[in-house]
Structures are given as structure tokens and as C-alpha cells.
Length: 410
Image 1 (cartoon, helix red, strand yellow):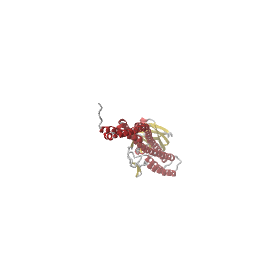
Image 2 (cartoon, rainbow, N blue to C red; image 1 turned 90 degrees about the horizontal axis):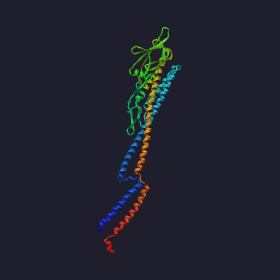
Image 3 (cartoon, rainbow, N blue to C red; image 1 turned 90 degrees about the vertical axis):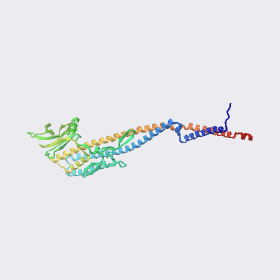
């Protein structure tokens, strides 16, 4: 038996079909306009969810890239600053070598002292270097604080021992600053383990230069246990000079006849004895202490201003210059360590940036596959849908004209 279709239903069925066709055409038209297939998450919830995740990941990588750029800029400025400080210290070291030349007279030393004082001001200025946005590079984590200040003739450190850090990848941060306390202030004297000083009452013309470390364990023990020694010169019955190394307990730990350029080993460090000592001259060998590069420069300026030539005064001057040269060497080693740390951070940024760039490219390709529409196929579907819609509208129009009253009029 065939069921009759009521008039409301006869209109509702084609109307719903037409509305569905119009909705489909609207979606296809939007895909043609945007080039994207995911205009409504409900249409493909799995792809839509993946697209959201990838979008968030790309945004995070972009943010990390921007942060890495800031870190790289700061580190490049820091590297340049350390390089400038190293060049200045090398220049000051060369000045010390020049001053130690026996042909340099008092007037020349005064001129060198003026140059060294200018170097001190340059060192202070470089120590207070800033990034283009005004952050101090050597204040540790206190980037808004000027790290070095000259007060009463002494340079003090106003920063802290920390560092500023920036995230360049998820879970990975790198330092973008250094502590001036580490880089310029806490510099060991001598060879880093032991240092030597002449007694102020020496009357001979001998000097003692500290050399390298021959036994690290012994040198470390001397430093840790705060062991000190006294190097004493004496004259034998035949007029020959001799030396003895005595520890704090008064026990002689080494002795021998002295000739110029004698090399001795004390607590794991080498020392070279030079010049002409007098009986009773004493040199103290003690654990290295920390002092700033600023102090070393100031000591050099004072020594040049005071001068000292010939005999005991000349030996005291030479001993002072030997010590200053050793301290500059330690300072240059510390600067090299700082430069290496900065270089390592820059290398890390480059490696992470390359990885992030590759990941962003892969994410963009994956996302494109998820959301990009197949435009030729969409255009074909749109054309076919438009034709079908026009046919449906025509058929619906014909149905509207087919009713009882129209038939009766005929």
C-alpha cells in the first residue's frame, strides 16, 4: 500500500535537502577562499585537535627562538667585552715587561705609570659595560646595578655571584651574564697555588720568580693547609752563597749552594732564584691569595711611581714586577675561562636554534597536510554542488506549482 505524503512533508523534504546543499556549498566556498580544509572542528575533530597541538608547539618554538635571539645578542656583547678586557690586560702586561727592562730610567717609569693609570680607568669602564638595552653584563644577576665602583682609591664590586638566565628550549636555560666577582675580582696570585714576596729588609740584589706546578697534589695541599715557607740566603766559610727552605715549624725542607738561575721545588711549585743575594736576605713562599685585576694594576702604578734602580732597590722593583706579571698571567687565564664559558653558551644556542628551526619546518609541513584543502577537488565539488542545487531549486519550484487548486483551474 502506498502511503500518501502530506503537503507539509512534500515541502519539508526538498527544503531540507536544499538547505543541506547550501550548507555544503558554503563550506566548500570557505575552503576555496582560505585554502584550509578545517573550518569547523566538528567536521574532523581528530585533525582539528592535532592542528591545535601543532599550533601551540610552533608558537612555543617561536617564543624560544625570540628568547634565544636575545640571549645570543647579550652573549655576543659579553664576548666582545671580555675580548677587550683581555686585550687591555695583554697591553698592561707588555708595559710591565717593558718596565722590567734594566734600561728604563725613572722618567720613563713615570710616563709608564700615567699610562697604567689610564689603563685602570679603561678597565673600570669595560667592567661596567652594558647591553644595548642597558643591562650590566658583569653584575651577576643584578643587571640593573653598576658592578664596579672606585671608592677611596679602591675598586669594589657591587653585583653578586649569580647570573641571569634565559630559556632557549623547553627545560633548557643558559646564562646571559657573568659575575664580575669571578671574572675580575677573585683572581689568585702567583701561579694560582703559591706566591713569593721579598722581605722589605733585604739588602742584596736577588729575586725569586714563581714558576709552574710540578706536583698538583702537593701544591693543592699547600694551599688548602695554608702552609708557608721561608727561603733564606746565607754565606758559607768560603764566601759561597747558600739557600735553605724552612717550613713554619723551623724545619729545613730543602737546601743547597746558590748559583744564578737556580731552580728549586717547594710544595709542588717551581721557583727560579736569580741575582746576587746577601746573607740574611729572606723571601716568603706562601699560598696564593685572591686579589682583583684592579689591585694588580694599582700595584703596578704604585711600583712604577716609586721606581727603584740598582742594588736592593732595583731588586725590590724587579721582584714586584715579577709578581705583577704572574698576577696578570692568572688574570688572563681567568678571562680565557670566562670567554670559553660564553663561547660554549653561544654554541649551545646555535645548536638548539638549528634543531628548533628543523622542528618548526616539520611542524609546518605536518600542519599543512592537516589543514590545507585540495583546491582542485574542492573546486570540482563546488561546481557539482552548484549544479545540483540549481536542479533542486528548479524541481522544488515545480512541486510548488503542483496542487489541487491549480489542477481545478485547469
